[in-house]
Length: 186
Image 1 (cartoon, rainbow, N blue to C red):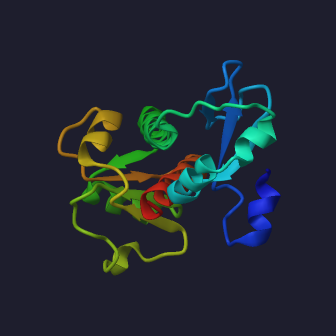
Image 2: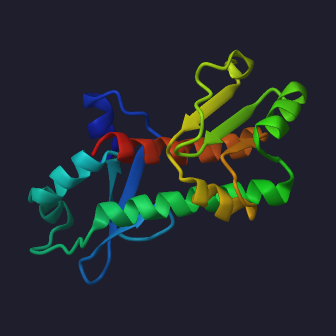
């Protein structure tokens, strides 16, 4: 099973895949950084689809083993994606390309063209705000909790963060899309 199998049969973006490796003791290990060696499979970041694939015998056949251990694989994948996003947000803060809060985002948005805005669960939506309507501004709402943003920024009461780096924007956006696939498809 590879990305082409799913790409030919659906409208899944090629970046929205998760690499799953088989450990020597037949455990499925998510490899979100694509660094683990050995035989692996690429699955779409879709919780319902992964659960369905785990129920079938396809992975056992693919890996050539009689038994596969996958205790709570989908929860582990979701947790790793969240931690990866939090770590990336923390790196953007250290790099000086993170704005915290709507006023800071608006101020920097006037000077910068590319921006990724992350809105915490429960915060007011930015979907109807024309100020943020631009092809270079991406907004992801309700994927992370306020405590996730607080942890990654080291600040309290954080509901909005803006990433003002094209490279960080792309990296974080890929992970946010994977998380969205997990949340939207459960």
